[in-house]
Length: 209
Image 1 (cartoon, rainbow, N blue to C red):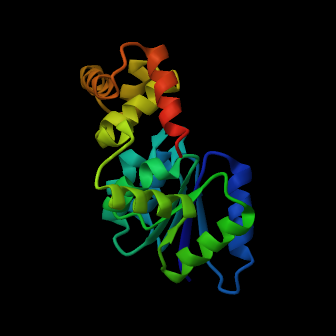
Image 2 (image 1 turned 60 degrees about the horizontal axis):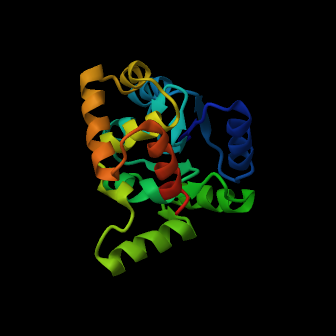
């Protein structure tokens, strides 16, 4: 029997995804996780064929764990869902993640995305397809967020959410000096000078999703 990993820090969402899976004619073993730490432990000890994961978990985000996913699950189909899937889709595709769906999607769309996952197909939401086409057609990156490195983007997400440098360093498993360096570089690329300005500008760019 094939195994599916569901990773979300909200139990009610894990239950909802499990209901969709249980409705399928094929039966699966389902393992749940609420944190990045649990995800890493599970994928290192279990053979996982499919994974459905929330972008942001309580102790970090999937960005940091993406390479471990693809290292431990080289033959798995992985579906990521997020409120801002367009911002991360291109980056995560480069890391081997094969599917993206918005947390704002309907239950019908989520079920369709999961069915694609179980068939081994790639699933991209309409918004992601449009964004990838726009980038290809334009041949340039119109959103300044696209200029950020993966680590810079991760740091800025935490800064905009009000996390302290110490909290960010703990979640990203970095020292505070390194976090400060990523923050300084990101501030420069986004052309902001203080946290309030960052939050306003960052949220504006994210709204382009």
